[in-house]
Length: 313
Figure 1 (tube, rainbow, N blue to C red):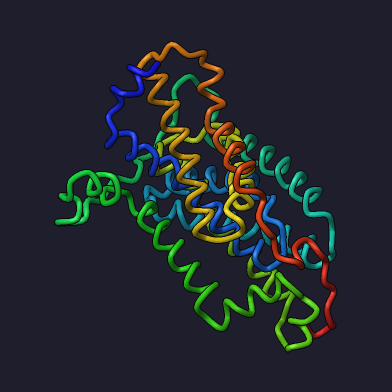
Figure 2 (figure 1 turned 45 degrees about the vertical axis):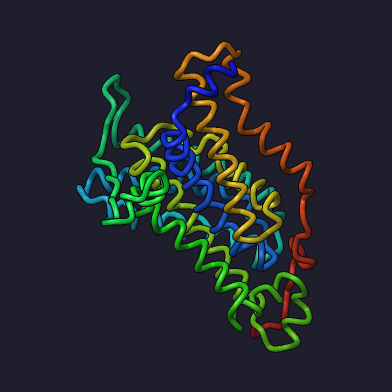
């Protein structure tokens, strides 16, 4: 086992880490827009699945990956409009609504996948996104190949992390946003439209989680398979908690998860003398260990608390 670990190519391992972490980062950062405003992003799994299918179908029938991305965004917004209405608007239980949306997403994607593409041994494929090397930077030893040979969604993801950090920590609007999650009553008294901010947060979550799904079907691969989300939304939701509800913490948690996933794939490919089942559960074990060591963090004080507000809010 030790010999196998020592023989792994570090550059290849870190490239795989980044590639596997990107959908988790997109979903987790998207989920933070909801969570920092006080609304649970437990619906991530459903949005990732619907986004993956919408992106694939859009790209297949239009011949354009960018149309596929647009279809994913629209699907994510539509699904999370339902979630926002039920949870933000009526105060329905977030886990209950998320479970319902997950069942809806599974049913819709399975039905339309078979209706549009049929059931066949031959796999329907689209042209996937290609890596874009940034001139000069990709020639930097080690870091160049790891960081600067990503596809457009990969670059967008890391810029999104920086943008969200700046928004939440350095802008007046970000301060209001966090106030909505911490104390919605006080925020409302100060004239901040609490319900509007929360609804927008849920819709932003829908956009970025759907892009995470698009990454799975038209960037990391070129196919769609049923239940393609494969619990990634639930993992991203856990990573938000692991990262203590901060963009930087979520990024580190996603990279850790991506590293564990990349490590188990490399060990399987190299025929490590370890039970296959143990390797498959390695990412989850890593996540649980770090979660146990770091603690769950302090979520916003108003998180999960329904706020009816005043009628004009």
